[in-house]
Each structure stands twice: as structure tokens, then as C-alpha cells.
Length: 104
Image (cartoon, rainbow, N blue to C red; front, side, top):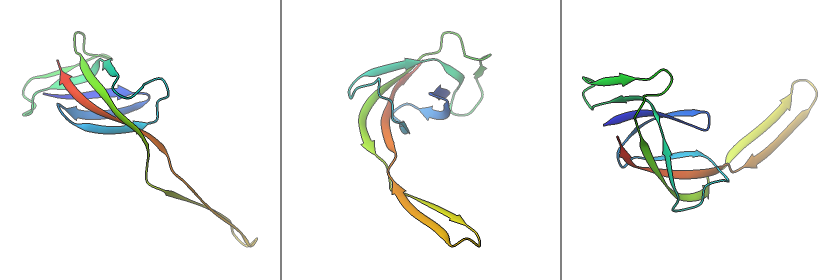
């Protein structure tokens, strides 16, 4: 099974046992399960496809929170041309790691 889900403003194509990374969510703890409905559900060959408007009724995707962690370091460089202004900073985005446990 294959599903397209929307989590906190982002859409993901997921299969069972996939691991996805989303922006950090403060309201979820490690080990907690999240349930959401899918926007689209299909089999692997795309022969049976259900498209929702906006969600597929009766669909259910269960996710388990694996961990909360820091992502890779990202460079932020600011510059104003012809003014001799340059500023270089770094930051690490906070990430929540989710695992898809079931799609129904």
C-alpha cells in the first residue's frame, strides 16, 4: 500500500515501514503514536487508487515517533552588494523522526 499524507503543512508519499523526517513538533513525545487520514491511497502498481476531496474517508495511517533530534548544519549567508557587508551564520534545524506502522 502507498499513501499520500499531510502532516503540519507538508505532504509525504509513504509506504509501510518508511521513516520520514518532519519539522520538530513539540506536542508529540518519543514512542507516541499518531493517526492521520490520507489524501490519496493506492496499491504499488497504481491500479486501485482512491483520491479524497480533501481526505479519503475511512483511510487511516498510523505513525510512531522514533526520536526528536537536530538536523544537519545549514549555512546562512547574508550579503549586500557594493556595501562591504557580509554576515555568515549557521543553525541546526530541529527534526522529528516518524515511522509508518500501518496503512489502511
